Image (cartoon, rainbow, N blue to C red; front, side, top):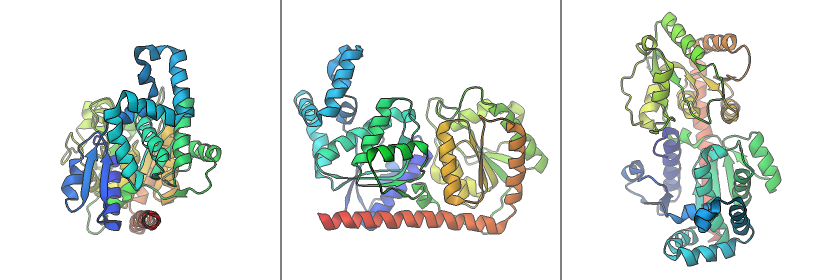
Length: 411
């Protein structure tokens, strides 16, 4: 999570809301990162960071068989055993890994609520996170601990096993707030028998303090991401970068990166940008104020300086729109098709997306650049985008306050 500015913003926003609603609560953050930003910012709250290793053991039962689990029959049998007889499987874990399991069990058992921070991680694209979430729900259900999901995006799935885990998570949750309601989510909700799911938008909006007064908007924000889940085969991204560069040159404005992901792997927005733009095009990109280690607060400030934004990242779009900046979302995968459809639903104005998997991409994208440039001149539109971002965040906060109050009354 610490390598994604959007995820960090959602987590910080959630902790801030919990702290305001329940100032005396102990908040335990399950994370593989120290999350120093939480400890530094919320020194007045009782916050603990924990990452019990047995979360992975519960989520991936095939570890029991060791190397033998690579044999399909044994691996499948263990998974069936874990899913059909969870209590027996838990007892087996206690026997084999009693030290670790007692730590994790106590944490879940003593909690009043297990709350999942927002994100689009209930999907095959982030299987390791899906597994950890499944482990949390697995134990919470056994101990009758309340389970809540906020700001969730769901799907797509490439395996039946991933889909079943996500379905169980939705089935066991006491309340669910989503940031999209796409095809994958609709199918899972129907199969899990859930009837009440509330669409609340993205939790990162709670961390954006927009100010449209007196700002000089003299740049075009850009974000490009080359990753397995964001880019389909034979996607003509290079033609898009050339068009953006030419458009900026014609309008005599610079381009400014709005990076969100800074993983050391291929999922690094700055690395993607440098690999896509030519050396000559890179000369018109303003890197002032941008570090290799991304701070979401700095990205939010950069977004404020933009006339409009062109982005392959969900949160670069969110940071821009909430600051009154018209935005174009570039989708090159099913994963982002649904993300951007959700943004359009919540904001309604100032946002359009284009699928790079379709035909006539060049003509359509050129028309969108002209549209965004014209939209950027509309002061009323900018102010309305800011108001909608604030309204979405406030509604999500009210709903969470109601849920937490209800849990307190039932204790």
